[in-house]
Length: 433
Image (tube, rainbow, N blue to C red; front, side, top):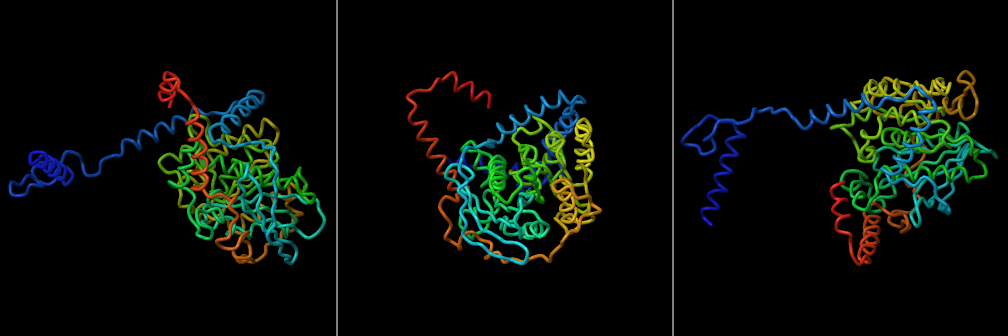
């Protein structure tokens, strides 16, 4: 035992010596050995990952034939659905539940919950313009604010005052969909990654939720189902891109401070909700943007964004690579970008550009004819927008931890019913993984 402890102690001393890089000194055990590695060692793993990402960016070139592209696009949509676990079409009642209706000057706000998967409900707000409609409409997706949609009400009522029905929806795990109702939390990190243990992904759940939001808009008698838009900033802009790529009912989209390149995500990605599993083995971000063609797509990035993944230069690389696909459709005018002189945000000038884009592509109103109403912000208190009083959430609005426990029990019960496994098949599955 003493010998074992002596060896452990020696290893500790030698390790200290190697890390410290001190000169040999017989009177100090921590300085027995000289430095083995330089103080500022290059991160070889990072260098290798970045090099592989750069090579992948170069290999994911889009075709110059429309026929070839449409075959690739179909395969991409199926592959993305498989990788993310997104449910693209559901024969499922929306079962919209209203908990509060608030009449405002020029519009009405409804606090609602609706079914996105069997027995699972999302919290949202509907902003409805005064009048009879049918109105064009838009899904507003929240970024990485812990309060979720509750911090994006200004987009909802700005759209409503400009003649659009808007639905702002809580991202999975944020806003009113957190572990403790009213205790706001970040939906990513280990919490979001835990979904992979039960065969789901945060990105896939968000795509599913947002497609259900489109389902809801299309079901409303005062909405023109042929004129649906989508927008959001940061994580919400990322959701906007994926929703527009996967759901052709979205006719105009404006992702804000979110479009870059998959290459720039490597060693610098933000949230797991923005990571496509095996993404660079499938496509580059330009391929996802091209999936929106020929529908209208406006990209907006800030010159002073502090995140390299969202630099306008990265957005420009993806824009440049996707533009030829729009040209193949004769729709180059439907693909554009707007760069503002500011940080990571959704500033008033981008809000105005978004409304103008929707006016043009959903209402048929040219930019010269657009009269845009830009109200003051913070017209609503968070408490007034909540679907449920704090701590009184419907149990069918599942948080990530509850969902994982529920799904985990179901998976375990299914495995326990299996009498025997094919050992060779299981061994091959492990090799494939």
